[in-house]
Image (tube, rainbow, N blue to C red; front, side, top):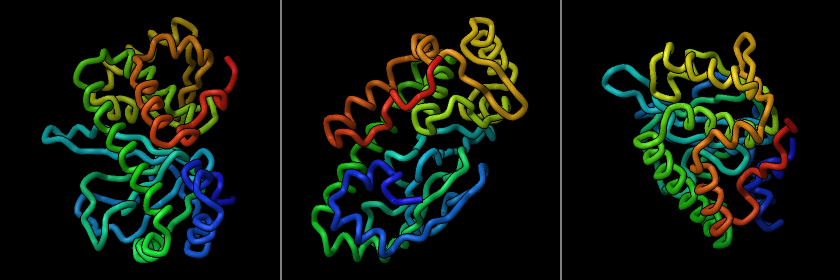
Length: 243
């Protein structure tokens, strides 16, 4: 799979893409693969390709694990702008299986030292990632679970280009930071309106536009910032399957 299947890399100059291509190793990871646990020393950066998706997960005192950020082909995780060895803060876990370009942080630092334009675009992506985290914090604090559930499903479809989200109801509840029974009620409500259906180990989006109308505007806010800072990098909604 070519590196250009990552939108961030595709937005780079040909010379910068060559620098990364020389250092990259393409790997296949299944859903559930943990790239980093909190405290692990970050030794590699991972660029999701195609429909691969990673989530940053934070465990709270109560044992609840909450997703703070989803990263797909619009970005990367691990040692993008930092220098030297640093410890990971959150768990980085593959949510949608697929291909990843892995680049050692030492090699990435060398590439950035050789190319100011590469350093610049990665710094701008880091700004977008922080904006996404800010929006996620505000969303989790103020928006109803139904709106957040719809938002998350839309974000998953946009990043994977697939209407079939590989996700158990337990995992979905954990991502939303609510109990399983509460998450199940939200799923049943969306099913009752014909927006989704469930299958074993997954949720299928039947009506993408209808689901968007139930979602909060947080995805749109993040997209707007990406478009200002890194135009064309945020996953295009037109890649979503028709309803």
